[in-house]
Length: 386
Image 1: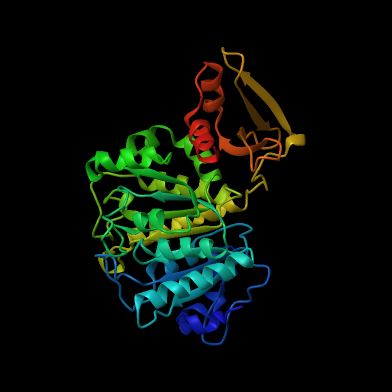
Image 2: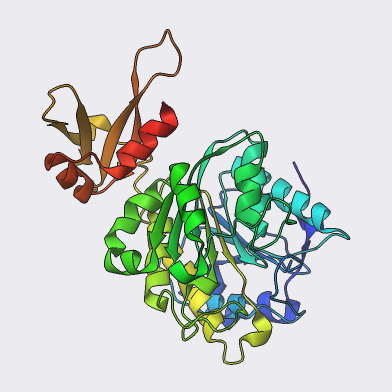
């Protein structure tokens, strides 16, 4: 067990210690905040928010002023909010490696307690430290990035915002079962990178596809353990406080929808929003958008159904047989939530009977199978388990 208090700077005492500043329904009233005379009680906590002002691997920079995202978030109204603590600002160590080890240790402790870390960054390469926390717990995960590029970098590159995914993929022992990119823009990625990720049976969803098929985000998020959101994936018009911002990208509404689906996912255990450059946020619009993204995550969270896998007794089973009369896919639809899963057969060892790995899917996958086409989600999952 680690001493959380020693790793975080407290928030501004004059602002955050007086809960009367906020009305009964504003988040500022219900969040248990770390101040000079109070450290949050981590018992019976759902979500822990904290800042990591680490930008060594990014072209964005930080300052020592109060976080504008926090100020905006505390003002938002929320009925029946989950139990949230605000740990404050992570104290950075003399070296980047030491800082990342602390992030890893903090996340492990939060995971162990069943608490979701919600990190406001900082460079997106902080995702590497969060991934290492899962490795430390020997947990195989599905990792999702909302990003306009892939951030693979070159093998010889140091860990940075443009190379962290390559470091995660190359890390041994491998604990990455699946990776999904949401919202990439073709002119920011190499066709060779797309081919490489496809050859690894990973998923890449182009911006245009996502914006036309927002409902398909739900099963993607339901299969995800950790979502890393680079705000450069959002249009400059909505999130200008980022040196990597682009004229094209997700709209603010799209970003909020993604975060809501992430919140609903029973499987998801950590979330990070990265590359926020407070110095560029002159009108506080990016801070307001990020706070609203977190609000939508919270709204999704309180609607969780405890359905990581289908409750077979509460599902309708559909078996789709193919024309060869040898192969079939079994679908399950929850009678309570309407969610869909596919059963992907696998054998854990030579002596055990064949089992099913349940992968979250959509009604469109079921329709595709009925047309005689094997859904791509099923194929990629089967190849990984084979």
